[in-house]
Length: 102
Image 1 (cartoon, rainbow, N blue to C red):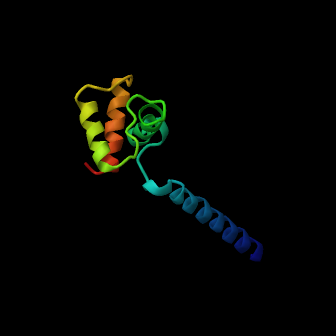
Image 2 (image 1 turned 90 degrees about the vertical axis):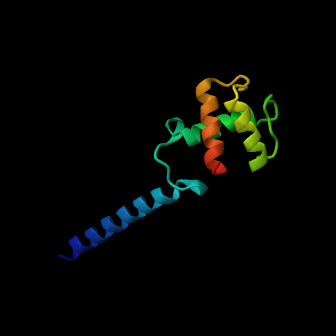
Image 3 (image 1 turned 135 degrees about the vertical axis):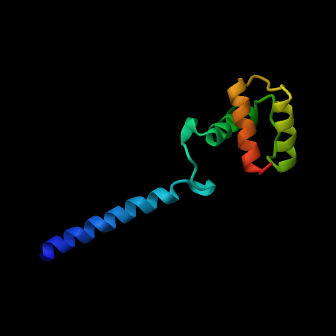
């Protein structure tokens, strides 16, 4: 009987530990519906940092703030997306709009 209680307690604690770790794994952005490239926010963030705002990127805006983000959003929505695909451009707009709640 005591062995079963210890086993039950151990499995309950392990379950709590695994589920609570999942809640904190999302970093500073809170839980989102998808992950990786399937989530438009994360995809837009990746594209932004790798293809838009890098030191060698033609569309680099420097410091990411609301003013610079708004200018870039207007540029991308206006059809001036540089070497980004339509999907990449839309994802970057989605990321910036969500990030700055535009």
